[in-house]
Amino acid sequence: MPRFLQKKIMQLKKRVVDIGTLCEEQLRDAIKCVATRDVELAERVIAGDAEIDLMEIDLEEECLNCLALHQPVAFDLRYVVAVLKMNNDLERIGDLAKSIAGQARGLAGEAEVAETPFDLRAMGLRVERMLRYALDAVVNIDVEQAREVRVLDDEVDTMHAGTYNRASELMRQHPQQIEQMIHYVNISRQLERIADHACNIAKDVLYITEGEIPRHRRLQKKRAEQEAGRTKQE
Image (cartoon, rainbow, N blue to C red; front, side):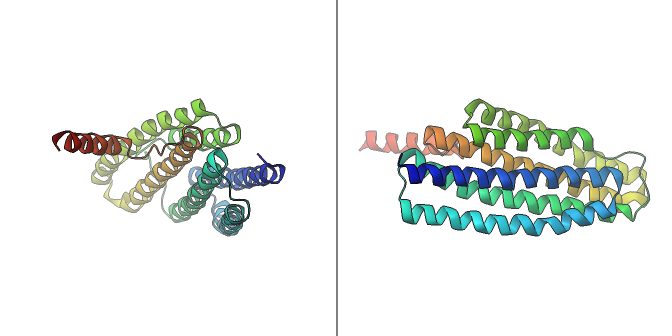
């Protein structure tokens, strides 16, 4: 790898880490303000999303300049393309953390509930861990850690799936708490979506190392089998 391109790749990696670190902080604070009903913290999270948006724009420009000026190939090309995709996922994570803070602000104006429809602490910790593992996998190009993110995603999906049924039961038992339950269902959904974006970042690490796009692999395999069958018939 030419020295100037290596330097540019390292700069892109640093920018991803910077955005990712801010997203981690936003996510952690968003979950905290739900648990504590801290309106001031919620407002800071909401205001902090603008910085992530600006960083996302800067990183996209850096990636496009790298592609145009340095014309990377093979591993380097995959890395720059993956950073472009990760950049979008991180920006969406920032948006979702902002949305969770908005739900926390709404909850703060409602009465406390005796039971929430999901375990905020347990789900929040898993999602935070997924994002941390995904970013570590990017920095170290660690395939095993990337695969661990995908395992945790299944756990988050299961937790989120149970939220709807429990929220429905609690709404029937306590109809005066419908507003609160709606907020909690939305928070669960937003955490599940953050987990999906962390999983996308992990998949991009697999793309960098293996050169294959892991999304919809089953559909790709099925299409290849169908094409092979048609070729055999001809």
